[in-house]
Image 1 (cartoon, rainbow, N blue to C red):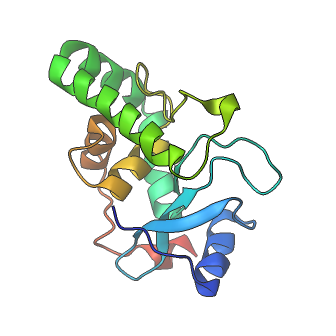
Image 2 (cartoon, rainbow, N blue to C red):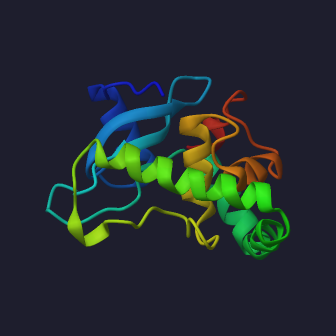
Image 3 (cartoon, rainbow, N blue to C red):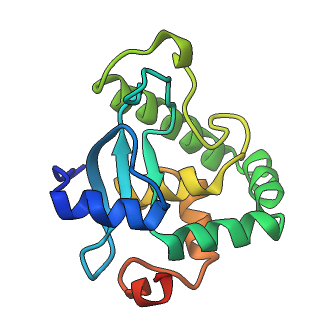
Length: 166
């Protein structure tokens, strides 16, 4: 994993992307081809001391739009069914959950969210935004559901759509 320390410009871009200042920002985990932050790493306890289980946060509006589109189309139920039917993918999803917890623990321990990852892992599929962010941050082959969701979009970090996000 390659994380970058966020620059002052990254903070400004994230505030524009989210419509508010980014809370708990630790690093940038993935970028659009134009260099804009796409996936950020958040601390497990944000600035106001609130527990925040989502380690990888999808910030790029074109990506969040695609994740929302898949969720609205009912793809989460499809992915859950696929996990039930595919023992290898189910085992990989459990490993993704454990990897997520291990990585987040390196940033701090928060008892209120211990054992809780994101996106419904390891048993359910709840938030494609978090699962796509996990796949983008860690690369293909780590989170099968994030990989499936990315494959079901016509969106990629390799093709900048940021001008459409403005």
